[in-house]
Amino acid sequence: MKNLPIGVFDSGIGGLTVAHALKEKLPNESIVYFGDTEHLPYGEKSDEAIQDFSKKIAKFLMKKNCKAIVMACNSASSVAFDVVKKQADHISVFNVIDPIVKVVAKSCNDCKIGVIGTKTTIQSGVYSRKIQSICSSAKVASLATPLLVPMIEEGFVNEKISHQIIANYLSKKTLSSLDFLILACTHYPLIHQEISDFYNNKVDVIDSASIVADSIRSALDNKNLLNSNKTPKYQFYVSNFTNSFAESAKFFFKEEIKIKEVNIWN
Ligand code: DGL
Image (cartoon, rainbow, N blue to C red; front, side, top):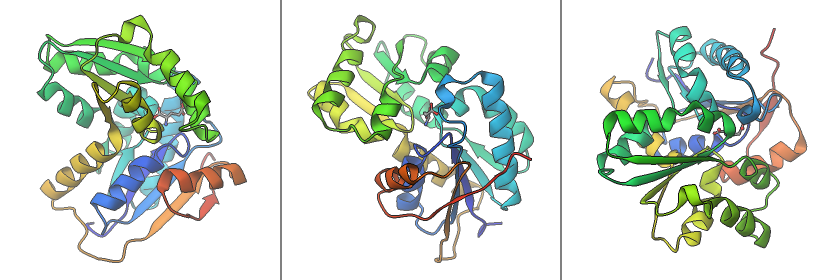
């Protein structure tokens, strides 16, 4: 079991930020990545649709013999974690929300915490529920920021136009006087610095990639499931291949990767 791969999935290529962090923190682990580029963006889909896609992807990753599944998408983690966990009940399933909530809740007494993400993630209210269940004095202000995903995918990062869109969202009154800002979308690590710059580094900006990877490492270690074999293999699949995804994937995984299209829906 130890030497089996970790399955990672997202609605598209944003989850590659988490896959990259896993590769950095767990260099012996093999990874099977699936990006549902055919149904992207999940942030605009119904809960039922996301649950259905997520269950099918989990089935695909189980067929690939994965020892664990990482839902590297906040939208899917928000509304489909329980159904995937139920379906894959013999292996560990990780979402990208719990590790972040744990980290923030440790130091959130009387704090104001901002959360930005897709419409699905924000409308689910999952971050505020989970944070307040651990730290009832925390104030949580959430804002859907749907323009950020297409902006990042089109490569508008660290440019005048991205500064303007980010400033427009982050200047909303609801997000004033924050102590923390949670980047509740796996695309957003790519604009982490731009967001920190907007706040002149005065707000603690938290993205999921490395926190999630740390928490998976310790969970696998506790279950004695860390790979001891030093020849990891990486496989990348998408449900709909385009050259533009392949181009952007390098940017998210920080190296050239080979992506294969696969039909998992029948
Ligand atoms: N990566 C997805 C997430 O973390 C955002 C993209 C989408 O809407 O599918 O929520």
